[in-house]
Image (cartoon, rainbow, N blue to C red; front, side, top):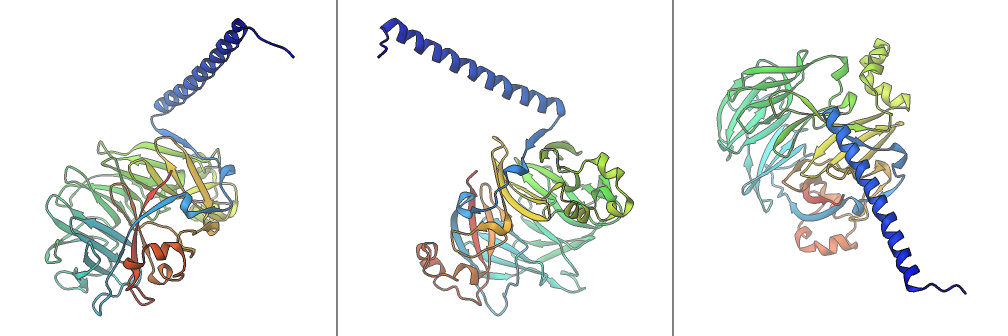
Length: 388
């Protein structure tokens, strides 16, 4: 048996501390180098390895469920599906794109009224795609392809304004300008003044930018972001013109602009089909950020993946969407958020899904909230925070 004296033990402790300090410095320098490289590139590169995508995972690994709000159903308010939700002050505003209807509820889910209706008369719209709430002027804006309809918060029509372009999504900036994601044969991004007059435009409409994500515009740290999905780049419009902010690097499996330009024209015109069938490229379909995290949907090898990435630490977790086990309330769903608050995602869940298994712990925990919900009820709004 070997014994050590006090001086030898102290020497071993010193050696361990020295090795730990060396490893810490190496790790720190590596991180500094990565940050410096990102600064040199002018954007933040988020490395996501497709080899780390999971074949299966539980929903509880991704989200922490908060409050539930069942939406009241009446003869004047029967919702088919919810495209977008905005919660503002004491009201919840819901856009049912399939029916082309806008509904207003209070924060308890009680139906308060409808905003406008489909038609060709004053205060009526033909085919809307998006809506926003002006929190400074206390107004609602409905995007009717190439027209903006303006309503008060209680649903009274005020006026309508034609735009010089067609668009399918828009956001309002802090200085009362507007950002539009175009849908015509012009540029994809239009910046307008407060009267919806175009003052600048970017990204010429071309085959390279033809992919349209579900949420092309989003808000991150009071800044408007634009997702150009073909090349997995997220742009900031903070200074009035697009600058790359994030680049989602799928360990070299991205379709680069150089590769795209080399594709035959037939593949360029059907670039999404090419990416899906090629089984080599990964492509971001959604990028929906909160303060620190973002939900990201990815197409890769003819499969759909869904995950959350921490935009500060770059920690991430992705799973094949069909293999995402809903261990919270039991039934599989496509988890595409319909809205966001400051730190939560808002999901629209069909009533029949929420009450399918009344024996599980989730239903029992929320039995008072869900006791009036039945298969014919309107959807239930579910608020959830990301865990990553």
